[in-house]
Image (cartoon, rainbow, N blue to C red; front, side, top):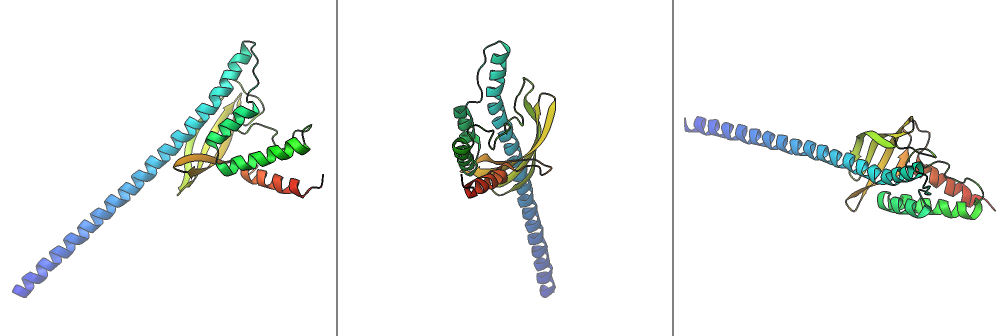
Length: 199
């Protein structure tokens, strides 16, 4: 009888520990899901904040232009400041290399940049905004965020490759979802091809 009672209590303890373990696993899973959700929200807010800050300069220039006070925007200095604040050091380095190549060898030509990557166009109006900002994937310090850029009557789908640097999410590439361009890859290819040329 004692042996039977011992087995019975051992079975109850085993079941209890399994239940506690499965409850603990459920809590861990819930926390993981919550962390992914909060990280996704943080990333969406970060992208919205980046574009709100960037577009505020464009919209101010548009307002001044509308009342006859033409102001050149963005200036190379203001663009460099925006890039330094919101793009990864690696992408900024590629931009610097391309600008050096273009100023040295293509000063009277269009060069690499034939449109503004922030506004997805060459000009803008007061309707400039982004919408439908959604996280497509987060993998450690790398993430992909989809959004729509509204400029005039154009709505341009855009995919941002994001990288977390020292705890801050920065843009590592502007990518066309249909594969027409990948800013970072295109910059690298341009630099490679230009450095092979003999001017």
